[in-house]
Length: 96
Image (tube, rainbow, N blue to C red; front, side, top):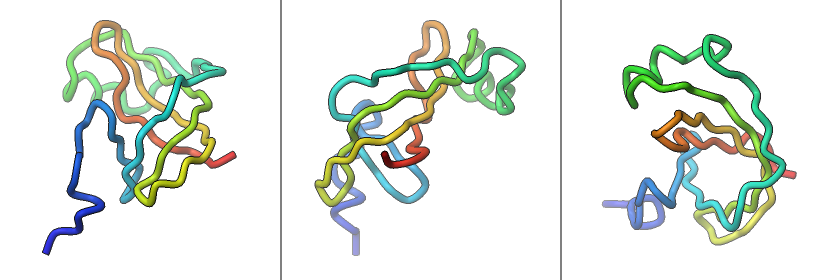
């Protein structure tokens, strides 16, 4: 039997996964900071292999996230961004 909460509406543009949790970003990401660039990114080879070669940066910021149960929380999120590719692998690092 499928779990309807997890299976429904898994659009990768609006829904993101963080381990076993799926969430949506609500509103804009603010206080964006660059954490690492280029060879300072530990998984640079994997990013290039999966998404294509690009000038990759690891960033962090604060935003509101909507969890599967409908609750909306403020969280710090981290993600990778490649020039011409966009945001990839958005993760919740901590709730604020």
